[in-house]
Image 1 (spheres, rainbow, N blue to C red):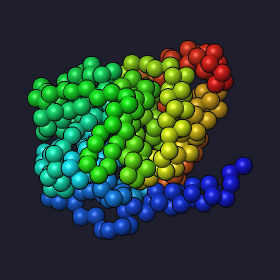
Image 2: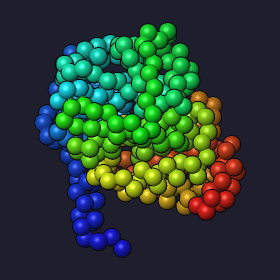
Image 3: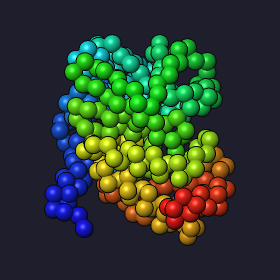
Image 4: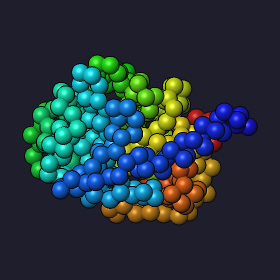
Length: 294
C-alpha cells in the first residue's frame, strides 16, 4: 500500500502535469516557435506545427534545453523547421552541445542546423537511415556512451543507455532538478519497436536499473509536462498484464502492432498507450516467461 507521502507526491505530480502551461501565457514567434519553462534552467522548445499548445495531453513534438553556467545542452531537434537553431540561440548564447536521444526521424530533423550531433553508438546506423529522408547530412556525428556525465558548469547531467524503443536510446538525469529526460524510451506512449528489435526482458532490466536512480519526475519527448516516476512500473505492468490477451491492433506504415491502452484518456496523467510488434509477439512472450517476468 502506498504511504501518505507517496500518495501526496503522485497527486502533486499529476496536478503539475497540466499546470506548466499556466505559468505564463505562451506567445509563439512569427515562425511558430515557443518555449515552456519546466524548472530552473530547463525548457521545452516546440512549434505550433508540432502539436499546437496541446493543453489536454495530446501528443506533441519537442526538444529539451538545459542551461548551465558555462554550457547548454539541447536534447533532440524534432522535425525540419527553418529557424530552429536561431530560436534556440534566442534563449541562450552559451556554447551548445546537441544530443539526439535516439535516431528516429522525429528527433533528428533539424540536425543540419548544427555542426556536431552526439548520439549513442548503437543508433548511428539508424540516424543515417532516418536522416536520409531529409537529404544529405552536413553535421559531424560524435558518440556519447552510457555512464558519461555532461558538465554544464553549475549543473551536471548523467547519461544512461536504455535499450528498448531503439537499441541506442539514452535518457538524461539533470542533477540540479532531479528530472529524468527520457526521449521516447520511457513515455506515456511507447512504440516497441520501430527499428531493430530488443528483447522485452532487456528493456525491463534497463527499466529496473533506471528505476533505482534518485529522481523526482520524468519529462518525455512527446509530452510537455512532468510525469510521476511511477510511470516505469505502470509501463511494465501494462505489458505483463496484457501481452498474452490483447487483441486490438494498430498499423504503422504497413507494419502491424498489438495495441495496449489500459486507460484511454490522454488528459489523465496516468494514460498509457503501448504498441508492440505483432510478428514478435510469440518470441516476446517466451522471452518474458523465460526471464521470470510472466
